[in-house]
Image (cartoon, rainbow, N blue to C red; front, side, top):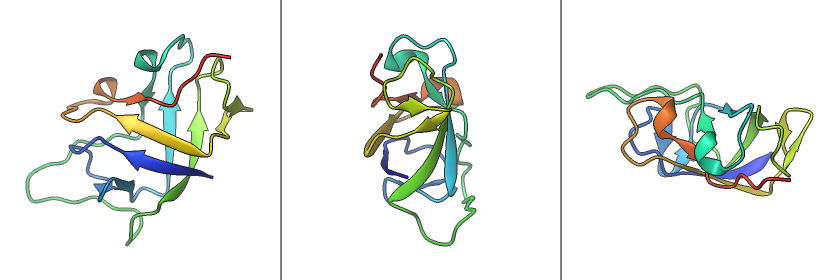
Length: 104
């Protein structure tokens, strides 16, 4: 479990820079840098709606990861202590990225 800081303000799971989904998937099977990754769990926030799998946001979260070239990836699981997801005004998951990605 990683400590997650989510900067994707337009995601319906984001609450107070934490994630209310419970777990996320980082995409980027062929990623060579953080801009080649994305949060595949992104769901665009709609006015007047809030999506939550959990009642309260969690500071630590399970992260599945397809970015096999990342030093923190082991058997498709992220083992970083802290993960930053960026993408302030994202409208799709392609507008997000794992800023913690570090090529091995």
